[in-house]
Amino acid sequence: MQASRLISLVLVVSLIVNISLVTMLFTSEQGGSHQVEERLTSLEASNAELQTQLDQSNLSAEQAASQLAFYRSHLQTSTAYQVNDSGVSSAGISGTASLMAPAVMQRTVLNQSGRFITRQTISEGSMINISVEVTPGRGRVLVQTSPLMGEVFQDAANTAVAVAENRTGTNLSESDAIISIVADDRVPEVNGPSAGALMTLLLISVLDQRPVRQDVTATGTIDENGQIGAIGGVVEKATAAKASGKTLLLLSRENSELTLFRGEEQQYYGFHVLQQVPYQVDTKQYIESTIGIRVEYVDTIDDLVRLAT
Image (cartoon, rainbow, N blue to C red; front, side):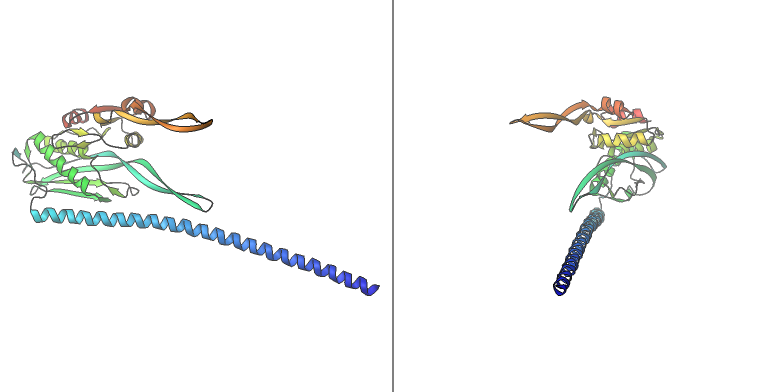
C-alpha cells in the first residue's frame, strides 16, 4: 500500500515537472519567435530606408552626369550662353541683386504598420536664395547651385538672361551673368523653370540699377517673349513665403484658379462611401484668407518689375 502511494506520488511529481518543462519550452519558443519577428521587421525598415538613400544618391549622380554632358555639348558647339548682339554694351556694368524665392521640396516618409512598410511622398514649401551678378566677361551665363541643378533650370537661366537683355536694351556680349542658388540642406536638387521670372527680375534690377523690394517674392516661368507662366505647388510656396516674412507673393495669372478637394458622402447599393471631390477657388482669395500673405497676378516681366521694384 505504501509502495503504491509512493509510486503515485512519483508519477504526480513527474507529471508536474513535465508540464512545467513543456510550458517553459513553449514560452521560450514563443519569445524567441517574437524576437525574430521584431528583428525581421526592424531589418525590413532599415532596408527600406537604405533603398531610399540609394535612390537619392543615384538621382544626384544622374543629375551630375547630365549637367556635365550639358556643359560639354555647349562648349563643343561654341554657342553656349550667347545672347543677342544688339543694344548698349555692358562692358562697364557690374552689380549684384538677390532675393529669397519659394520652392517645393519633396521628401519620402516611411510608415510602418506591423510588418508592412509603406512610402508616402510629402510636399513642403521651402525658401531658396537666388542671386545674380554681372561682371566683365565673355557673354557667358554661369550657374552655380547648392545642391545640384538640372538641365531645365539651366535653360530657364539662359532664357532669363536673354529676356533681361532685350527688356533693358543691354548687350551682355562683354559681360558674364553669374546666377547663384543656395538651398536648404533638405532640398536634394534644384530643377524646373519656376524660378525663371524671378531670375529675370534680378537681372533687370542689376542692369537698370533698380533695387528689388525685399518684402516681395515671386514664382513663375519665363518665355522668350517675357510672358510669365504657371507653376505648381502654389499653396506650399505661399506658406513658405509667409513663414519667411514676405508680405507680397507675385504669381502668374495662369495660376489664378486653384483646385482643392472636399469629402462628400455618396451612396452605392446601400453603402456610404466618402469620396474626395475636386472644386475650384480663386487662388488670390484662398491664399490671402487662409495663409495671410497678399497675392497679385502678373502677366509679363514688365508687370513683375513694376510691382517688385
